[in-house]
Length: 480
Image 1: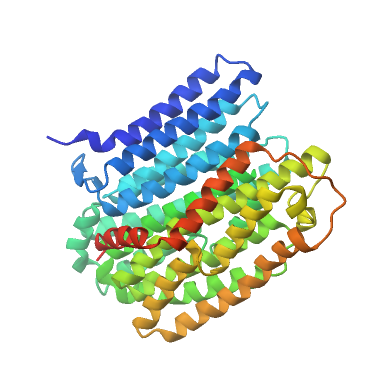
Image 2: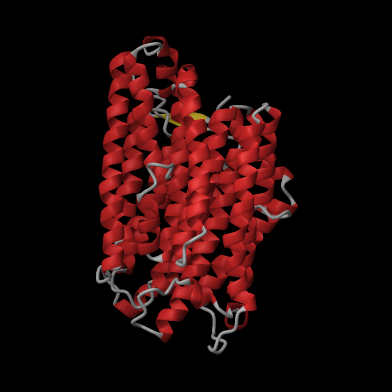
């Protein structure tokens, strides 16, 4: 008999989303603040249940869902990001009459990500992908009276729909050739795709479809506009959570289902990794919008993680998986810190059209010292400064690339990391070395609490990396 207790975290999360939605119908706007605490508690409960289930493995529903070290690792990433977002959103949704809709969409998006992590069938993976995507399309346009937010949502929806069509088209070719959508089944019948035009077309379509969600160049064009136009808390969910969903899906598709076609997709990923990290970092240099800079930075980070598809060793995969965890805390924290600054600017100048402009970070070290300190930790971690999560992740990933004999790829990645230090350090310069006329303000507590949690984990992974790396190695074994 199937052990349905493996689904307890997902059921808890979905139940929380439904309860939040229903309770919100009976509360007035001022009383809806409690929904943020209820949503955070539900996400935390689901996270605890996943941690308690570590080490358990199993299959459910005719082997369409698998529960193993890889799926559990990514579920913890998704839930950790969702917890940070739900905590920070307590302040963001304050006084909003649609609070229950915001939290329900956020929770259902996270549930979709969790099912992607467990998917052992291409159709289940696609349906879970769309569950998460449809919810995030709505979240991106949550500020209905803000034309920039609506534009971000529309671009995200249109390009996301195209990527879904491409991915489904690729799945149809795989099914047509192999007669199955089971990921292990496709791998077992992959001989039917070897050396055929259908096999090559399947690879191209799956790279394009998943490349949009991961934001690989040239499929990245939606990311800067969407991350900038979305509410900052939603941007953190997209960059730190939704992007990781794309990676775990790509791991399953290419490293398990289509592994025999490695010769067809390795070179493509090598080219995409180099172009993505280079363009992301170079374009980020000229950005004056901090959210847009973080968006291009996120594109560059996707290029680093993509190196694992080229190296294909257990160490490289562990480095990429650890990078996904580290990036979740770093990027979510950076966007939440930016959200705190946006909140400050809009509370002072309600008609500001560019609340995330870098000029608004002037003197932040004096005006909002906790936010400035946490933002500095996140930026230095993203740059790969030692004793941070970003450094340890890059060290493992880059070292595995050199160990595999791909010194050229490691050199390009290291040079790109050096470039990124310039635009990260520029924000720190504005916060601590440029004056501001504004007075010190009371920092919004939910934002601050979420930032502190993220900063603690960024430093913990850097200072005490052994257990996290071991955990990532265990997850990588599922793919090798």
